[in-house]
Structures are given as structure tokens and as C-alpha cells.
Image (cartoon, rainbow, N blue to C red):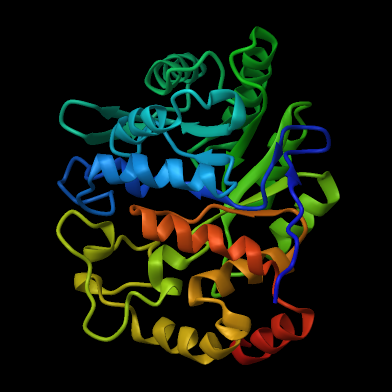
Length: 330
């Protein structure tokens, strides 16, 4: 089944992007917290990462989401290489709020101060090789509301200075997202959403406020790609091999958590109908869920970029498919 995909608008009158973005956490490579726990997705080949981004461009992907802390600056640098010569054809989103050491690739601590927001922005502009960030996102999901309100006003100052075009908050809390949405140039919220983890309150907020719903973990950190079958485990330097408490889909050693693997199996036939791969079906579910969604699946190879971009040819799932999935997972 072929369905024409409509583009999305960031906010009521912001930049136009394709219905699919690409998330650049994985191409940052290995990095860790101060205790040595991995925060990346394992080792990467930068040449393959660059080739994958350029292949995505060829296939119509124009929205790329990264963060300064991914790979302790490395993701931004790789993305800059890949997008060289195409800056005006793409929309770049990055995030701030975490101090890190580029030399040791180590996360240090969160910093919600206005002074650090400016320091971080200057660093991202330098690493990305650009004079403006299209979408600047607060990366501290649980920052106190009073601090966030101050940072919202700082973002308005950045817009006035021409350093950023718009801003958003990466948070799973609708109250926090609504606070940022009070700003004139807040155009989106980035939040977790996928077949296994719906976000009805956040999607309702996006519809009410005219915000783009940028969906991180649209493939449940790889679980919805079909790559994590029985016996498959995360490798060295992969956050899924030693999952933190919030990473619910994987158990110790990086194997898929049985209860979540069972849920994937329950809906696999529906998601892979109409010639889709499992990942393409999961992306189609998000597009069917709301006209505001912009999923940003991760990638590390040209083949993954091609598979993810291929979902656009299939478009959203049908309403009856979404209803059947809801019934099976209820």
C-alpha cells in the first residue's frame, strides 16, 4: 500500500519538515557517565555514519535531531561533516543541559543555569559549523518549573539574537511541556512515544497547542526493529547491555526483556502487513496516531537509513490496524 506522506510544520508557522526525522544519538559513538556506565550505543564507523546521513538526504529526510552530549560532542561533529554543503536544505535540532568532557567522552552533570545555556549554544554552533540552530531543546527532562521558565525566556533572547530559530523541551511531562509552550517561539515537544509506550496526554497537548510531537524512542531503542530476538544481546559500550532503570525494554546483558518481547510478537503480524518491515510498521503506527508526530528513529548504517526512510512510502497504518493493536496490547 502506497500513501503520500504529508510534511509537518514545527509549531503553528515554523519550519516545514518531512514526516520522518533521524535521531543522531547512536552515531555519537561510545561515551559514559563518571562511573564508567555506557551512555552510547556502542562503537561506530564515522564514515558509515556520514554515508548514512547523506543517503537519508537522498531519500528525502530533512530533519536531524542530535544533542551536544551525544558522544560528548562527537555526534554534532559527525553530523556537520555529513551535512556540509546542504545546510540550507535541512532542519537541525540539538539539545543542551548536560556538561561533559569531550576529551574523555564523559558526562559530568546537568546544568540548568542561563549562563550555561549560552555557553552550550556557542559550543553547539561551533561543532555543527553553522550560524544558527533551527530547534534548540532543553535536555533536562525533570528541570524545576521555575528554572525552566527562566530558560524559556533565555531561549527567546537567543531567537531575538538570531542564534536559534525556535526551541522546545525534551520531556515526558505534559505540565512541563505546557510551560515551555507559553513561549512565543516554542514550536514542539520531544517525548517518548511508540507502539509499546503511548503518550495520549502529550499528543493531546500538541494538538491543543499546535506543537510538533517529536517522538524519541520510536522503535523502543531497537526492540521494534526485530534485531533483538532470542539470544541477541547488547555489545560493549552499548547502554542496552547495562540498562539504567528508565530503559525498560532490555534486561541485564542487553537481552530483550521477555515481557516486552512478547508484546512485540503480539503485534508483529499487523505491523508487518502490507509489505512493511517491523520498524516501518512501528513508524506507520506513530503517523496514524497523530498528524503532529515526527518520529526520529536512530541509525548507524546506510541500510538502517534506507529501511527507516522506506517507511514513508507506506505511510500511516490504517485506522482498523491501530485499533487492533490497541486491543491486543490492552
